[in-house]
Length: 390
Image (cartoon, rainbow, N blue to C red; front, side):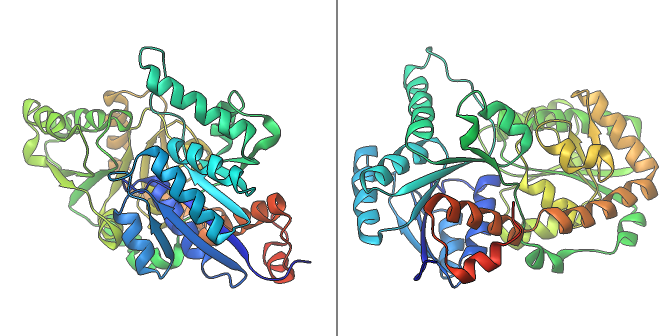
């Protein structure tokens, strides 16, 4: 058995706040509570993730990519790892995977990566720089890192074409159930709402298909004029002005509210207040927003993509839309509104599914098992905590 602490360095961008950042934050919060783990986080941006980790008392180092070149980041990370002498480096996203794997290798430190979703864009030689980055990212995962962690079994199918199968392991995302519990409402409140609030949460980028959400809203407002339906968009991004113009062109601006980016407890309260949450994405990994909405008891209607069908148990915990069109979403929304008791029954099933399968503590223990296997670190107290994790 090993004495001392398992020293782990997390290396990520932290430029935005999305599913990957929410997952890393939840993981770090859990890891810091293990007395046998010494956790250090290195970020390339001083955004929301940086601030939230600092507020938790977690050691965070900032290598500002706005001020440093890739070569300078590599040099400083290499020195930082030399000073810390960790057992393992855990990387997130392409640039960080490459630099982190190289810096770990030159320090004779083992490393793994998490893949939080399939690429939003296919790299091609029309953009040689991005194609080269894609190649470096795959090369570093194949040759320099010991494990590639997929957030879902569905994503693993894509990764089999990129990395050796024996390197790929699945650890599904987990959410901080204890922190979210205070935002939950009684299901009866939703049942008796006269105004129906339907929302979407995410970055305003093409893959999220917020345009489809707005098109669906226009159809609903036309087909259900007797209903008071409000559509809320929580998020920011490069498509904001284009989406606002779309809402104006469809003459639904009065019923669509753009809230911008909402963080922390604010967004959780807003999700809990919704009568329906939509995910109209073209593809997904395992969305943290989906898990949070399910635990909060908010009924969900989602594109049947990525790990979503598995999470919803093919519809027992929510409603799937197979035909990814605005008409299909509008029809599904109408049915959910007209059959609210059945919709809320699915939402209650969803709460139990998240509690049973998608807690942050389960997620952290699964990662600790991987860390232990990769490094050979076997502290007796840590082994006791992760016993039974496959």
